Length: 160
Image (cartoon, rainbow, N blue to C red; front, side, top):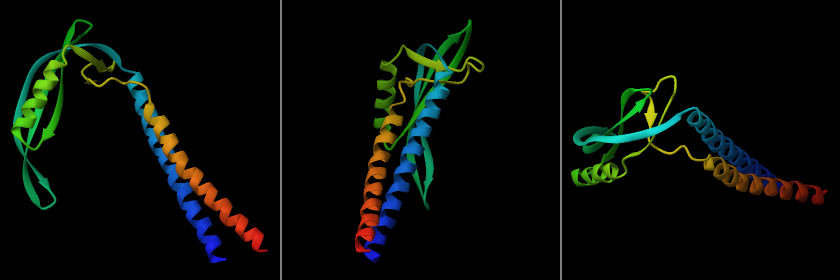
């Protein structure tokens, strides 16, 4: 009898994990897509790129990192705004290459909020593909959990 209940218990664990994955990833991606959908698109021009040395605390140890930062400029209703992208690297060479690669992408699309045009980002909002990924990945766990629960319950019924 304990084997069947272990199958049921394990099935419930898988079922809950699957629902958490599908719901968590799916909801988060969908919410982010809805937020991005409120933004408008315009074209940004490269302004400058810099690399700065910084120290960050990681656990009990301070480590040196290099922050690549790119500034871009865009116009909304005749007013100019500046936005920034930044990436952290372990070496100055990686950070410099990051700035070079970023500058090659310009001009590019920038997305801003119509009520606050100084809020912007450069990544394409795209489609909420993470919703599908979350549902599929979570669905696998739900399927395995459900199958385990049914197997455990049917073994219990057969034993009676």
